[in-house]
Each structure stands twice: as C-alpha cells, then as structure tokens.
Amino acid sequence: MAKIVFLDEYSLGGYDLSEIKSLGEYIGYDRTTADQTLDRCKGATVVITNKVYISRETMLQLPELKMIAISATGMNNVDLDAAAELGIVVKNVSGYSTYSVAEATIGSALALIRNSVYYDRYFKSGAYAATSDIFHFGRPISLLRGKNWGIIGLGTIGHQVAHLAEAFGCNIAYSSTSGVNREERYPRMELSELLQWADVISVHSPLSAKTAGLIGKVEFETMKPTAIIINVARGGIVDEAALAEALNNNTIAGAALDVFSSEPLPSSPLYSLNDPDALLASPHTAWAADEAVKLLIKGVAENIKNFLLSLPQ
Image (cartoon, rainbow, N blue to C red; front, top):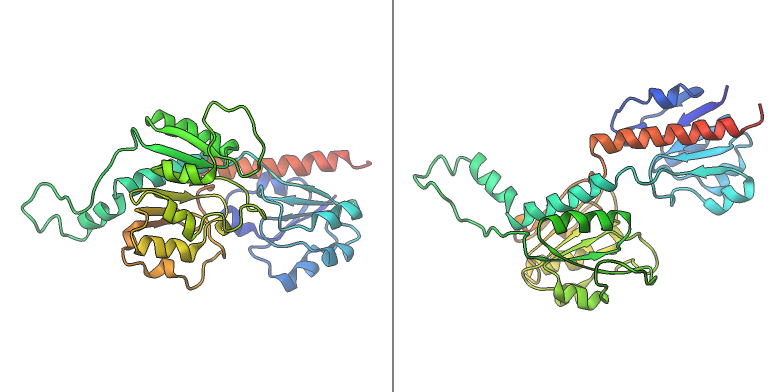
C-alpha cells in the first residue's frame, strides 16, 4: 500500500479528507516547517503540499517518492525541473476556484462602491440607534451599472468576472499580460489606456517577470480618482506601498486585496491608512468557498488515484 503524506492539512480548512485518506497509508500534518519537510516525507510514495516547498535537495534524498500532489493551482512551491529529471510526477488542480474567485471579485466591487463596511459599522456601533434620522449619508453609494470594468488578464477567471460584470450592466475591456493576441468578444486595450478608461480594475493574471510590480505609482496616477482596483491574483503584481500612497492621497478611491507580497503580511502602510474604509482586505480567502474547497479535495484525490493506478501492479 502506498504511503501518502500531506504536509499542510490546515490549508484545506479542516474539511473531510477521507477521499484522499482511503487511497493508501495516510499520514497528515497540520503544518510543516522547512526543517521538518525531509524527515516527514521519508518513505512516502506520494507527498501532498499546498505551500510547503519541495526542493531538489529534498527530492534527491527521497528515493521512494514518485508523485507530488499539489493541493492548489500554483506550482511554484516545487522545483519542477528537478522533479522532471528525477522522474517524479507533479500534479496540480485547476479550475476548482474559478466561480469562487469571480464571485469574490464582484462582491468586493459592490462592497467598495456601496461602502458596505462603513454602513455596517455605523449600524453596529450604536450610532444609528442614537439618532432620530431614518437615513444616513456618511459615505457615497454608487451603482455598478454603467461602470467601465477593466480586466487585467483575461483567462478563465477573468472571463467569468467579465460575464458577471456584464450581468450588472458594466462595459468590459481587458489588457493582456501574456502578449498573446486572441479573438475575444471584449475590446483589448494597452494597460495605460485601460487604466485611464476603467472605473473598476480587477487583476487576474499570474505572477511572472512581466507582471511583478505591474501596478505601481505611475499606474495609480493614470487611473481616475474615482476608480477602484481589486487584486485577487498574486500580491506581487500590485506595489503595496504605492497603493497605500495612492489611497492616502486620494489618487484613487479604493482597493480590495485578497493577496499580498508576503503572506501573512507583516508591517505595512496598508495597516495605517488615513481612511481605512478605502481598503477592503481578506486573508487569501477569495478561492475558499465551501464548494471550491470540496472540489479541490476531489481533484487531489483523483490525481493521486489515477497516478497509483498507472503504477506497475
């Protein structure tokens, strides 16, 4: 029976892993540090990791390791060249979070332009109960309908965001970060043009040499002062210091972030903005709808099952 080791179970939120556990001799660890990785992987045929890094040095010391199952889409936590050289199969899971991230993107836009957090806090603080006014107009409320929505990275998630935003009556355009020119139903713009045009910008591109620091001081100054930006892709794409400056100077109206340059994010100017309500932030949870997590677990199990069935009996 194959030995299966999961290095960071906590990354799946305590969900039922019985579908994976049934596939072999299973050992799961809540969290694994870098200096624990090698010892915990010894003797394993399959190692499951979400964010624990598997290096060449580690693989070289694991002669029984045949597969690394990534419980995510991103594969930057595995030395893929080393795995290929050593004949270790690496499988990720894609597509499980498309709807979850797209809905989180729309929800973030709605929360920002309607100032939902401010009004919720106004009610819960007792301020509403203490007044005789039926209505309160402390912050502006706007519609998504009629807004120009610019998408950076029109991949699977970008397309789903475009579909949902269209249903709200938005005008859609996009900018490509890959440089590939495809036939799309939406107009394509250069990034600078898109930033000038859009009322809402959402980022859905992978982090690469081309996209690292893609949105910084110059780009924020190109945007409308009434515009908002949403990043649910990778933290390194948006310069966080430049974003904090842009929010503090009212260069743009607001931002929503679910990803950060370092996760968890240590000290940052984002924690001490002049107007905290200009930023809506979440700890990398856009992907984690209940249905998406269950689909991810099913995908990991299927990858492992198919791999084990391919081994000589």
